[in-house]
Length: 247
Image 1 (cartoon, rainbow, N blue to C red):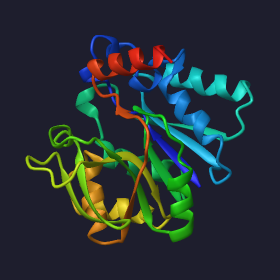
Image 2: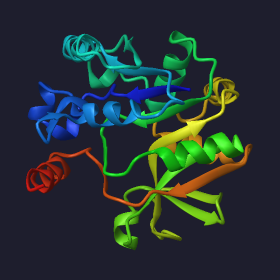
Image 3: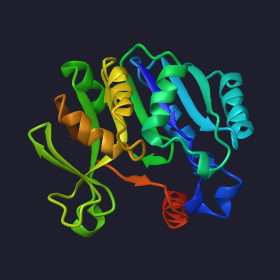
Image 4: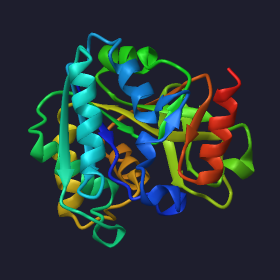
């Protein structure tokens, strides 16, 4: 299984700090946010290759990080894919960005997609085990336990383990279960990304792809229990930084 870590954003909502440090490399508990994800991935025998996708603006920082992990003896294969974008106006969009990585890295295996600005305090064994058992696209869900909070995310309806509804940032959420950007997908989904883009669908916000995908292929959701944060704003980062500093 390959894992794609999406770190291509320019941190506009994190300015001024986002002008100099990519979100994925912001410190949490004394080490880069991305490092918490990568060290977790190192625990799973199913994971063979980890692909970090970023942009030209932050290439030096990610090259330094990847080289440090290799020199430190990290046990998985690490690769870096660079989008040819230098500022926010050139962004490919999250979905087109995934398609770009899949093509450039030559992904032919089952794969996971994880946003590099995810901070989570659970392991991924349940997601991986469910995917390995069923072969169905499996998405990590988080219960925000608040209808107001759910309005900020992609909201999911479940029937058993099957996702039967998805709505991006709804005004009236039908549940408090939201989709995180932690997906396990079968290798056939590589072609699904190409198809989605070729049909001129919205290339940004991965939730649009999820909604499109689940109308064509059975898609499962697993509710992961434990803290999870999308570090998209300075306020959220400050909250996580302070929360983890007390542990």
